[in-house]
Amino acid sequence: MCILAIYNRVSERWPLVIAANRDEFLERPSLGPARLEGHPAVTAGLDLRAGGTWLGAREDGYPLAAALLNRRQAGSDRPAPSGKYSRGALCLGALDCGCSGLLSTYLEGVEGGDYGPFFLLTADSSGANVLDDGGHSQELAAGVTVITNLGVDPPDCVRHAGALPRFRALLPLLESRPELEEIVEALAAVLSDHELPADAQDEGALAGVCVHAGDYGTRSASILARDERGRLYYFHADGPPCRTGFDRINPRPVPASTS
Image 1 (tube, rainbow, N blue to C red):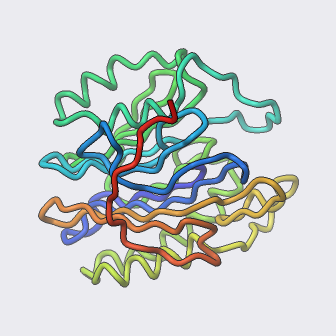
Image 2: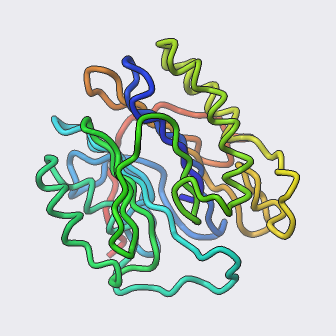
């Protein structure tokens, strides 16, 4: 996951809305979101190379959403160091927590050095939090927050600077108690946007919300929404959202690993 917007407690009807594009090398094998075997309450995408997930939702009595972004240093072209474990496994581990107490214990026990650099978002009925590999935990305030692989509302990220006004422009819609279909349609338009900020400079196509850069780009997009009763709704575009429609997820069992 490389760009994610979260609307946290903006609307009484929809207290949590997440919209995200997953950017990845096009040849990396993966499966779209489904109910994962061995994780009976979790619906998530599955990375077939390293295991784990980039985004998913828990659908039992503890509605939880979690997402993983690979962190990078501004101005650095070097690949991030790999850890002992897949970062996607960290996200899946959070989704396996069946209550807020278990989630808190799990997050407190994360050893950032065991993973490549990351930002881990978790959001339940009590609010939303972002943990990074340095052990810094940040509770998100009410409103809209945009996360990229440079951080939470990072001031030095041109992609964030271009995307934030587009996501902020949807705040009046969220506040108006819209129907779910209206939210999905509006967010899909933003996630499909290729417009580059005026100061994109060397970032080029990577500065857009929807990315097309040769063998790398936006592989898929997802929209999650939780209503006032705690029910989670999951929509997914299994391809670049600029040319792929969003479907409501109907979970189906798939293996949780390739072994």
